[in-house]
Length: 389
Length: 110
Image 1 (spheres, chains in turn red, green):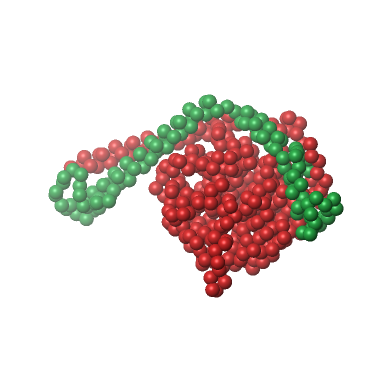
Image 2 (cartoon, rainbow over the protein chains, first blue to last red):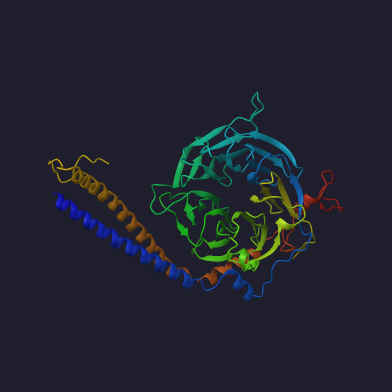
């Protein structure tokens, strides 16, 4: 009996080895085929078409507001779709809602769990959401009357994740659903009205390697699609109707993918990573269209200088500019098409005194907000001479 | 995982500790191996599908062209040169709170 049991284990081990070999060689073939199809990148193509990089004068992009009020590092920020309001989350254990135009604080929300990592504004601007080390996502309705201690009460708690909530975003045009990403390696689509999970994407029971999810971005043109960035150096594209497996997995980065953002046209997305680069991927073909590498930019010859991590990215409303913040305090403005750094917000007048941890663009594209470990948020806008063609 | 039931109906108790450990670890090993093989086969199928798909998708250059068109046809308030129409609201960041948006005199906020 035991002999036959032993031999069936041996058979299984052989089948396992064979399957592993097939898998390895297929992966290699896929990599090679993809490389063959990468006949160019965006910058090479654009240069060949005679495009020249965006040119900023010294006072074109300026800091036009400084939002002060947090007493700890700012970790996350999000704008409302109706242009001027921002919610920010900080190490001080608070969310602050700002009118960015007037610099006034409209709400200061003391959180039940101080270890917050992410925040989001609902599409109507009526609610804000946050999440962090408590593994939960808390929803606050901004028009709820304050409690006796002056605090805004939590109106809904979304619990179910088995790890920290690193990122959250409301589904566009839908105050009742949001997507979270977590240290438990899964993303979840929540129904806020019931507090229940509608779908779970990824996580420990899925096939293949998985790792902590650090960032999500929902496609503004097709809200059924979202991208997640993970500690396993990949980004994954998901269809909310198909939770069982990712539509596609995007390889290329060599470190944690800290930030993902859909490109404005909805057909590409950008990523920022601990490997110091940002990348642009095409969702339909899976091609890696461009690598944005500061080391090449600055012609930094020393290999012993580690590349600073990319902490956050955002695209301008046309996609021509890619804003990328780094752990060394730089905040590069990349010309997306030419893959050149055209400005460094980290060296301008009124730049932050410490690393920028989060970036976000106003809904009409007229301003960029940066949030920093120096506890402030800053608003940047174009104040130079604009040529409209 | 129920390690006390044996699939081959072997009622003979193990005669030594190591034999018992080998039996149960083989049993657990079988299930784990089967699960891993199944996962691998799933992944093989997915990669095969992706390889087949790649044959029809075309090179990066095709996509680059589309990308450039999409970017250049969009308006952008943060660019020095942009396609129109411009929106008067773009410059609200440089207007004082008590000025109307139609005011001709705008201050720079530097």
